[in-house]
Image (cartoon, rainbow, N blue to C red; front, side, top):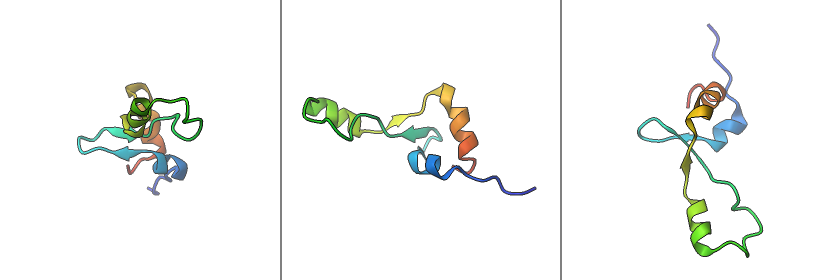
Length: 65
């Protein structure tokens, strides 16, 4: 049985937490930051968990994650 190829772009975007869940970065922190409050920017800087509906797709792209 050959090895499964990992989607490299997905592997750079997702990581596994200690409990086995998949973490991701939040959107909206790249540009147009002047109108966003410091509180909002701080919250956007924290990582979030991948939604349960998308977890299967991420695991398919990153089988060894």
